[in-house]
Image (cartoon, rainbow, N blue to C red; front, side, top):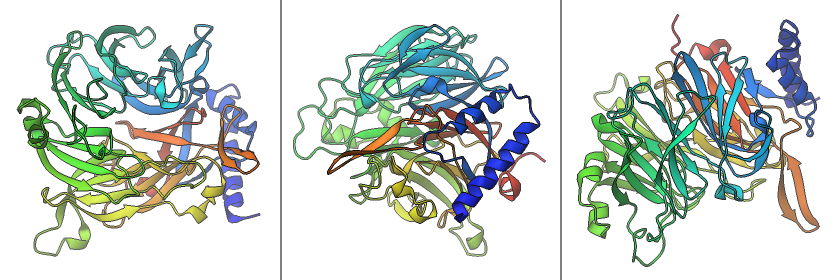
Length: 489
């Protein structure tokens, strides 16, 4: 028995002993029973992280989770890739869209409703993106309501009333007839939304549309924005397409845009006020006006997630005169190709203390040999980090989704040398889809976990969702590693 097999066996035994103390009919026990039926025969693997609860999300391919506290409950909103599955709540076969799950008790998640998405293939359908804001926070909204901003396939951005998550109702269409959509951002305190869109007249199929959604029922268009070369009438080599952005809000007055996936990545730092209030006509000069700086990554790296981390104090430099408090952006690439048939995609630490000269100072990678991940099937490499950073994890721990290597917990207290402190790879189930590569004889397919995205909520629970239809897993840190986080004593 190899060390990895022994660790997996010990973890499985530990889980079964814990489960024996619970009711046999509990949802977690049912999940464990399903895991035993896994086609690949590989059990859960982990170190310093443990499973709290899970939900199969009706066997839908999952992209983005967001967890929101509303009405005394915690609700998980999960965006899905294209496909279809039976919704037992309605008895209908529904196109993958948005799942709403009550996770108030994370040990017993309860599936509440499903909002169907658009029919399509791959990322061409479904409803991948979700953002949620309370009406009491939005400046002009109904304070009694809760609102969901989501995509409808690649053609529409729309808003739903999810005050009663069991019965969501559509409020309005923000914009439609688009060429593409992806991972947008919505500022709940201002109502300003930065939408990844593809208007018909723009050359790039993914750029930014800025809208005022402070009154969700009455969207107000502000402007279109992108890199020079994205705009209508431009020519020459096409710059990398927009993947997403993270706004630091009006207080910091910065937005961090990420372009590219697994190649030709760009980090663009933008002055938020200039973007919103500056000249709108998409000339090269006007597109450059709000840009503070730009970092072009090397050709084999993209920029899926661009997460700012401010005011990190590195103990190593505590005795040095100046320079011990720094600002950083974490850039996470996206792996796109199965079984390592591409350059390795990783996470990079970029120092932006001097915004005019951003530069890379560190990186994080999962060693392939630690799990023989290239031979497991599916994608191996980075995809995203958590975007919500609650106080217990602030400047201490980040979590990265790493496809067939699950989720990785990383100590970032020394941002120059991020250090893995834990991980969790779920068990495949009878719902986990195969991932294939072309070979001379045709195709080689393997069942593989594909942890696509990770998010954390303000109680400290970690949520991961699976691209290969394995569902959602809710996790927590354990042992000495939990002490690195700043949980209340």
